[in-house]
Each structure stands twice: as C-alpha cells, then as structure tokens.
Image (cartoon, rainbow, N blue to C red; front, side, top):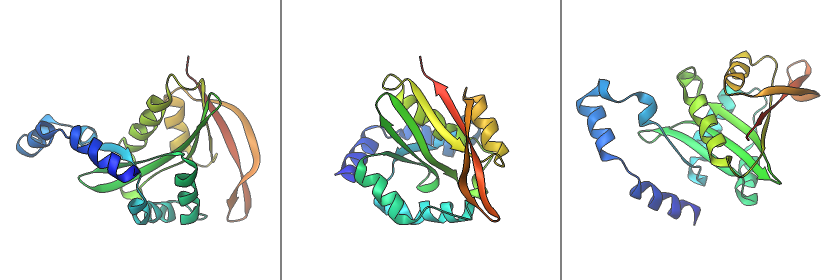
Length: 179
C-alpha cells in the first residue's frame, strides 16, 4: 500500500516545468532542486544497502531496515532522476523524533544531499514533536558540522555506543529544540 500511495503522490506533484528547464536551460535549476525526497520502498533496499556498506565498517543489516518498515518508522530516500543518493530513517513518538540512520552515497557527499535529507526530516516532524535527537560518531566531523549548522546542540555522550575497528567508539548525543 505504501508504494502505491507514493506513486500516486509522485504523479500528482510531478513538476514537468522544472525538469524541462533543467534540460533546456541547465543553469536555471540547481541540482538540489532536481533532487527529491520520497518514501523509501522495499525495492529501494538494494541501493540503500549498497550505500550503507560503502559508508560503514559495521553496517545495518537488511532485516533492520525491514523492521523499520514494519513498525512504521519514517523512511525516506533522496533521489535524482531515479538514482538513490541517500536515505534517512526516523522514529517519532511521545513528542520526540529520533534520527536513527542517515547516509549519503560516498560519491555524492558534500553536495547538499545530507542537508536536504535533514531539513526534510525536521520539516516532516515540525509541529508534531518538541525535540529531534540523534547520535553521531565523534570522528564524523563533517556530519557534526552539518548538524550544528542546523541548530543541533550537544547534550551528552553515550559511552561505547558504536562498534569500531579496535573495540567501541562513543557517540555524541545531539538535540534540536523545535518551538
């Protein structure tokens, strides 16, 4: 059902003018304008898993993503002309949202895709929650910079949260207040 509703929504909001101008007048439309966020489908999992395994030495397994579908977490992909560039998963409950996983294909990083996904995730919960939480590895300075630029603040440390090559790595806990 989720896939059918997403296809209907995509048909209804299709912006032919934007694609036309991008093709005829390439400088008139930014790449960011051509990227779109949509609900992740089960058929996206091969692309999502490829990105996940490229980015993480200890990736989530496919069954974790499937479980996220089953429990109704918000799962999105960012795509451009049918190519999945990244994905984001979030849980929303009791006035809080938690970004569970966000990842951009390594070949597409540092081009605004992570920002687009985070802004989408934040906008989708605005008015429903008071706070958005996430964890990040201290070694992921690029992500930390993005989150801070979006208004996230450090609220604590989770000791030995992430598996790492030589044991475990802490997680920095971040929060964004939405008032």
